[in-house]
Image 1 (cartoon, rainbow, N blue to C red):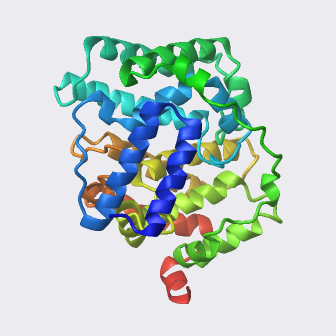
Image 2 (cartoon, rainbow, N blue to C red):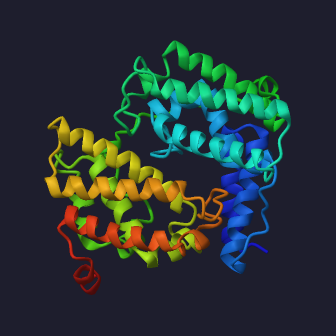
Amino acid sequence: MMTPEESAKEQREFAEDKALYPPFIVEELKFAREQIRLKAKTGKSHQKFSKITDFTPLILSIWVISNNEFQERFWVRQEPPILNGDNYMETLETFLGDARAVLEANQAGRVSMTPKQREMLQKLYDMVDGFDGDPETPDDPGHGANDAEIIQHPKWHKIQKYARLVYEEISGDDLDAWERSRPKPAKPAKINYKEMKPGEYWSEIKKIYPQSFIKIFERQAEDQSIKDFYVCLLSELWEMSSQDFQERFWDRKEYPIYDNRNCMKTLGEFLNDTLTLLIANRNNTFSISPKQEQMLQKLSSMVKAFKEDPTLPDDPGYGLNDGAIIQHPEWHKIREYARLVYEELSGDRLDQSKSNG
């Protein structure tokens, strides 16, 4: 049974999903939230990942790739409610990683799909992977900075059309019928994101993150030299270094970071923000020391190897198996080294910060 607060939150999120997503995704997101609540209360989930329709993050990424309206609203204009969640690079990382894993699992006999679904998913994977690696594709500096140009590319339009067919084949949804039935989204009010105050959970967030990070985050409003990707990277490094954070928010899904953070989401953001910072450093638009660059490159290599490790526990998405993932011996090494990298970049000493917090 849900508490009154959980019930109200579920009704609100279900209504928000229904206004934005097609029917299959709405129901799967509802089911995923049920599994998150179940795991938070019992320590285990009953969700099984044995067929293609069990992989909601993959199917959601296919729909996002197919939907030009979504990309214009949330990748380009950054409309709420997806304030800082989706962009071209994050979506591609999710799709390529999940599609590759599902295709390999299908070949090994662990995940079922029809021959047609497999053929179409493989073709879409090849199209997206080829587009991302094409030298004619517009540069992507990260954080959606060039998404408006990327989604106007003729090859991207072909990918959108094919992704729509793949989504319908896997989900069973009729997107034409759904689009005819839903109201047009209201034109959003203009928002100056640079002047936005931290969210309603800010007082709680300040109790979780190190004071050094909080000070950098708050100082960013006045100091334009403090880049968004640098602040995000510090946040990701600290999350990767903190066993307490991982157990509380990745595994147990504690409030206030109830459904925002998980292991693979953080690792994907870390790799993206690290690449952005290293490129900025080499282009002399942001400066880090040679030691900091070397340490970031080493940690990136460790993370990439970890994500490809065949002994890694299965990751069904939404952090549902993070409790097992963060117990992996290689993760312990990453956690220890991420702590050193965070301290090197932030100038903080986490033991001292903890005692002063």
